[in-house]
Length: 248
Image (cartoon, rainbow, N blue to C red; front, top):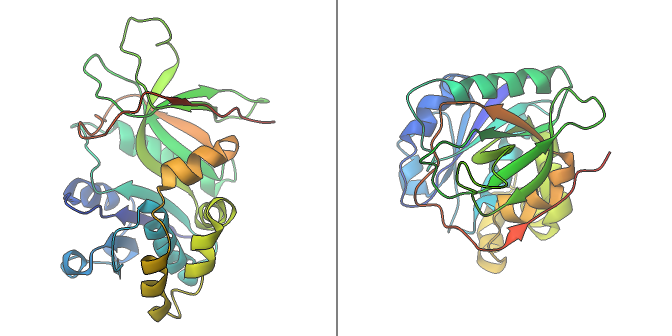
């Protein structure tokens, strides 16, 4: 089993922080970056160009297929290019713990989340819950609203960092189950890259967090990063909450 890092290069953002973080866990040859081809030509590792931006679901699937073509048992760390980090190592420690848990079979899909601070910016919040003696807290619910410190409902909430760790095949299977049209269209992309353009022209956009992770929350665990992260201030906040309960 090998570890890989996938960087989703979002249009208009720099992935410098994500690249630096990725190199804490893997060599450059095991970093897969997905995004606009003109940007990727300057990157090391594996570059996967896509015709147009259709959201993070197809971008991640293209990268996962590249990893699985090389190692069916691989674990991956998924980072976004708009990741914003503070100056300490809280997130790094949480990712290391998640990779160890994946390698030992303790959990197969994990969301890294952080303790909110007094100046926390808007973003997803995550409520975790211990389930059946499992050593990792299960994700109980996810919401689009942040409750400020010292207000009712604040206790026990973590802020999503948009960092996901898990088995590559399981994350691909999430996409297969939740957004099957994209999976069917791209499943042979590694061997038939000419099919990619047609899929990106015909299929609607899809966001991995909204369309895939929220629908798969009963299979997720959360690993808290107690320090070391500040959310992207550009993240848009919705007014509605999206809840999903974990099962046994």
